[in-house]
Length: 273
View (spheres, rainbow, N blue to C red):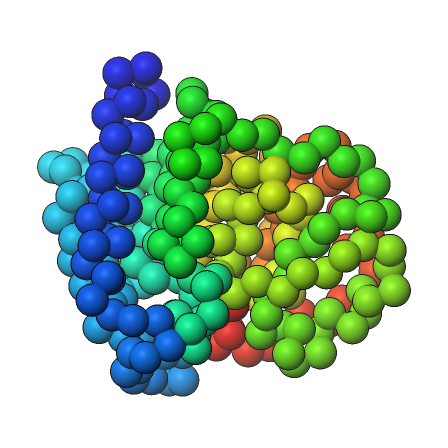
């Protein structure tokens, strides 16, 4: 992107996040009604759809594509270079339970690669913005990723649901601190902002879960790979990844080596966090 293009995109993302926060404001976390999506794909609330509506209105321009968890996908995006990939409310389970670990996630993808992103956690008043041209900011202040090169003593963010299911027991005595967090987008943002050293998920994730987070981590100079150590590409017909790893470039070789230990990736694709 040119400098002008980058400034316009980042301003659009910031405005869209702010509008989505206002759209969600009438819904009180912990006291909001939720329905179950078809196929047991997790909860959905009126807050999800309200945020989706305003994000679509503010972000989308002629010639751009759209992929959102809360919008029907007609696959027209597959023939478009620039595509918005958004999750209007990532961590709906935590939102419904009143746990302050949910977020609004907006990523912009160009030719399959994330070029800009924004993630806002209204419950903690944190807004992360980033692009390759601008680096990463937290509430307007420039931030950097951690420089740790060893997992010993590191803070690793784990899926709260995966911990509940016992899937992280294999890591409990490995010398790093495991911290449960709900929204996967928020976990990626915290790593990009230097608030944690790494995160990985053992369960499948969709493009909308992670597009903004991948954009932020890469904008901060970090690395994101699938759990099978493949690069993360976007705007594909099949939106699901087998699981993801995100951390600083200096830490990646040790994380990569650590995750080569036998790990059973769950068969189910129904777990969102």
